[in-house]
Image (spheres, rainbow, N blue to C red):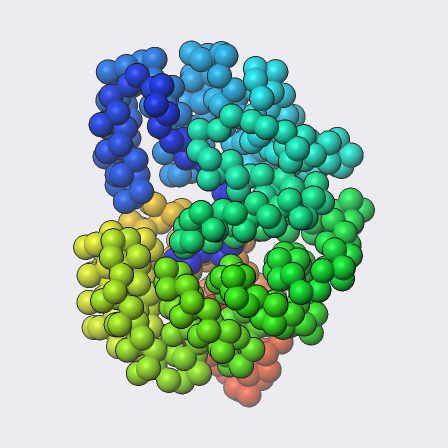
Length: 499
């Protein structure tokens, strides 16, 4: 809920206002502000009001479609983009967004048709890149590579320079133009050394790694990058990208730790910020902090704007058992931060209180973060209420969080656990099954197994046990009563629920 696992762009890109838009700009500005604050009903009313005031404002039409995409109301988003395409036949953007949404729905033929139509209307970097993704999904690797090369080498108009450059980074990686990709990424960070830039580059690397996980042409991209890394062993960029690919492909731990070690050794000086780019992986590979603690400390001092790096360093302390120092570090950081960063940091500290069992302090932080507009805090507030046994209150918070992020696996799992405890087993099973389909964590699996045991479905119960990690099954073997053992593991693992 706090930091979603890096993944490909799972929502339509936000359309930013252009200076040529003749619509009521104040309404559009307020609509985007409401959207960023997850006030979706207010944002929808503002976008619709802007359309009524000026039906010829393409930004209002596309903005409403993006809002529906955020809420995963895909049918409404498709209608909105289709209407915009009919109203503005000479603008490629509606067709691009239509093609992107069709692609995410798995409608490859219709996505290809929409993106081809967009390119027939005018040049579009995003259309080339997405069409490459569609063609690769259809098994047309050579045609896909041609689209990636066109996206990487071409010059295109852009509503938003930053988003376009991120697409350029991804296109150059997929086209195996590694010096150009890494040079663009360095330039982006030099111009905007903030956490927002880091998060955008993470998405580009995730998209690249997803399309380099396989055989044939896809495996060839990784092999080409490995060759580049051997020629430039002191450049941290190839090690960072290879680490993304290795983690995505589930490579052996020995290999991923080797890549992480190379990254930590090379990401120094002006490239120290790359540790923040890979911080999630580095924490997973070194839960004791030995591999990266000194690197985080060194670079967090050099780049204070990257507050998430400092927060990651504090969480390392927490995981190593030094909770007081971790909480002091968060308190100091919260005093220095402002705006959205401050709100998110307060909620993050609340999560540490939650895992420590200080539910009252956790709730106080979640409430303070929510008052400042913290993202993901609503779901964590529901988690704290589950831990306190206030299940009906918890469900209200968890349902509200899922209204904003319907596919968040942790929120779905907390909701499923609350419903299981209340005895609402069919609803609990639906929520937990949805969570396991997104992120197959042992936490969701244990809850599902407990439901199967309570239903008396012995074959399904044993099947769920077999799907648990080997470490969990070994702990379970120490208990004579399997169901009680599962419950004890679940209770003991409250602070260890991240994979």
